[in-house]
Image 1 (tube, rainbow, N blue to C red):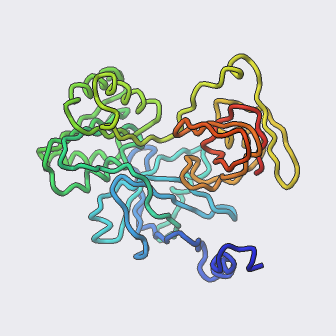
Image 2 (tube, rainbow, N blue to C red):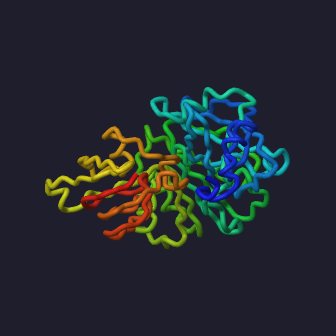
Image 3 (tube, helix red, strand yellow):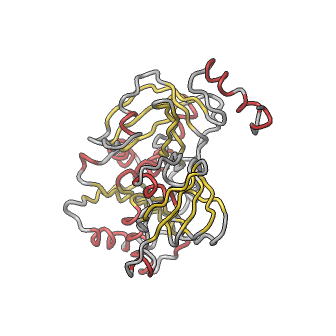
Length: 349
């Protein structure tokens, strides 16, 4: 049995979980201190984190893992608290949008103070790289969380910095109070709300263009909106290298020509030697397609971060929803949650 495990820790995992419930190798323990609603659907969680956790760079995200109905489920969240909170008290905060019809996020509001969860190391390269250079931040929805961490962590302000915060009214603007306090005490920081109910996206674009003399732009939010802002900047002379972007959700590209012409795609999902053939929706990921046909592939973050949904593609071609990169047509490993079907497929789950 030991020879079938990649490490002694995995071999002893059942015993270790009996001694330390919820223990996961490669993860760190975090104890919930308190939770409070930032908005009607944004819940802020404060955690005391294990002293073994190596810390984070403001702007990074982590994988939060819960045990639910006998299995582990995970989602990715950006850290929204300043670095000083971690350095002084070993605490971090996450601000999570609660999807009341979802499986994972409603569980966060059921956590009791003192509950222990698992977190990964901090990940991602979306962080403030040149604090001495004038910068413009644009955040929408949950995109405010890594941006707030970057701004609230900044100690030495050397040049003007602006934040355009897109929201549906101030009552739906998470972390607004902290950012307003920062703007009140820091003259080099300007906070501007953009109310999507009254200000068209084109008006916000023009406000960004008026700041195009800035040397850095940081965009974070829903994929379609951020792409719109990015293209507006590039079309008005901003070099793409000056724009850093983090998005929530995956931008599904238009289906391939043969599917647009009415031809249906199909895939054969093989599990334990049994093949199930299904019709595919090319405007959804393979994970979504499989779930809609009653299959239950393993998954975690649903954003291509945690690699829990990796499986073997036997044949066929897919597109990576994050980068647009095309796979080969032969056998290789893919991530179901970020793979868009382009041809007939055979997948081993």
